[in-house]
Length: 179
Image: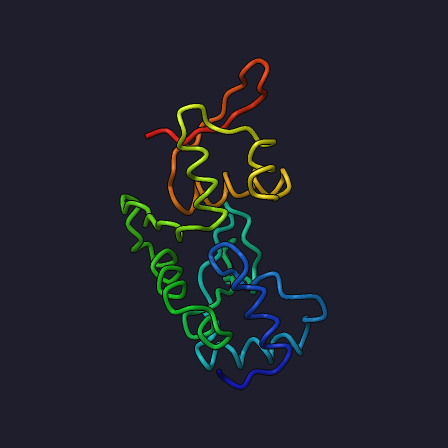
């Protein structure tokens, strides 16, 4: 891990959590001459990059370059690595920033470990009759909001499963994984 000041770490961490790794706006308390110095040091070390700001997207400006244009700050690959962000994430974000990401790349599908609550949830949803939230609560002990989050976040987005929901009279809303 690289030696960073608290101000530098806050700027890099805030930028790493934003879409496209935008470092702007700077965290509270970072403005004026102090911000210029800290950002200058990060740019020198290759942790931040000055890139053209997309004003149409509403990206915040670091500085104006004239003619209605300006630059914004983006956390560079080295900056992400300096705060401990995984190398795979660093490379992926760098490719996205440079426009080299392939939009037709299929999502990586992972399979859950056997015997976990997640695996049990998938088994329940793969059944012909599906499962309701109350049935899943009884089987896993999870709260309803946790189940809905697992369905939309883990099953649909991370694992790429096609989960549908439908309302059945007498049973309520049920969820199924479609083949």
